Length: 306
Image (cartoon, rainbow, N blue to C red; front, side):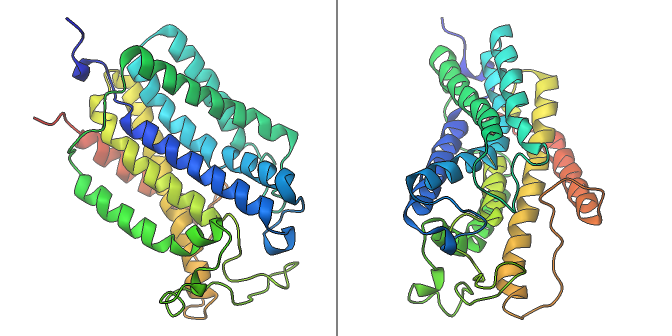
């Protein structure tokens, strides 16, 4: 008799959905940066197919390397072998090179040779996900998990505030769409130092999109925590996903607040940036939020549905 699926560890259904979402984002960035001139984008100088491929590589670094690191805990739990554990650790180490200062620089988003290192980690994470799914099964997507109502509510809010960025990722201004012009502040010029023609929501990729993606990924992957068979790995994965959720929400809200409220003139107080870890009030609040999410997830494990 085959081993019951509930005893195989975390399922990978949500993980494969996340990989599909990541592929769509990378493809959108590749096409947009390949077809638009660099002057219409933000802090890039290479155009054409080379520019699109390079900017997509940077997106594979940030945020996709952080996403891959979050998936690896579920993969290792389902794989349950020393070989999978070793490869997962190697993949995580390669992915987390992205946090080293200078690997991804917001002031220069053209691809660099060092970007190949986190990209290799992402490729290894994807290969491991596929290999473990083939060997031990996917495990499916869980029909109902405690906290799903809150997950759905947060996801709806995140997607709603992401509407201007979703159009920008495809190379269009959201306020060109009938009905959105009165709601979205997008192509009005709001200059910054060194960017005299910068629009309120520039075309191309935004760190708000990164934040939204990380938040949505964390919401999806936490649905499998209750099925994890290895307690220490569950603790580590829960902590990482809790931090991912807090970090993603902060950056999504911060970018939305800046572009839709501060640049519009509705408010004058900005939410401080938290893109890079720092000894700051923003990171103190962010870490406190992550700790609260971790405590909630550990106190109310997502138990198997009856």
